[in-house]
Length: 153
Image (cartoon, rainbow, N blue to C red; front, side, top):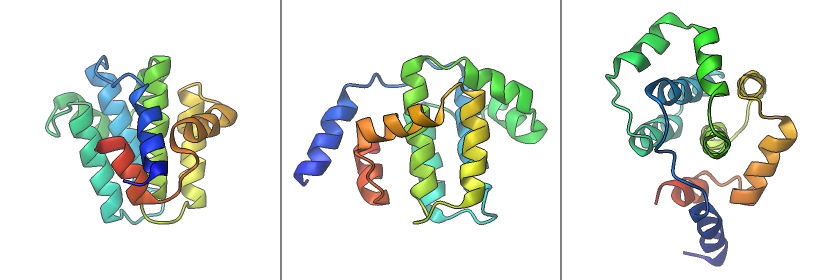
């Protein structure tokens, strides 16, 4: 592990793990990642890898009825309500998970940033806060594998 990866992991260790999430919040996070993944009409294998890793990290069963309901109904009001109820620590996790999905296919598309803006607004995360969190924990790293390793290993 190089020194930059080590430093990113040390910063990351300071953040509480997202274990105090409600089932609705977990489902909302996964739905948000899927929304970002589908933005460019092509789900990349790394985007799928991220969604699966996040589901494991937050302990959400892919067959959970709340998740299935979120996915089937497309109820934005319910999605936004669950996202807006995230704690400050979990909002940081949310930003890092979304960022990882956005860089997963090697390029950030306009449609992804448009959806990001809607989701961050719903979560009460300003653009400034979003970039501040990415800088704080990931040093604005854009290499997918490095960020993935920092978050999940």
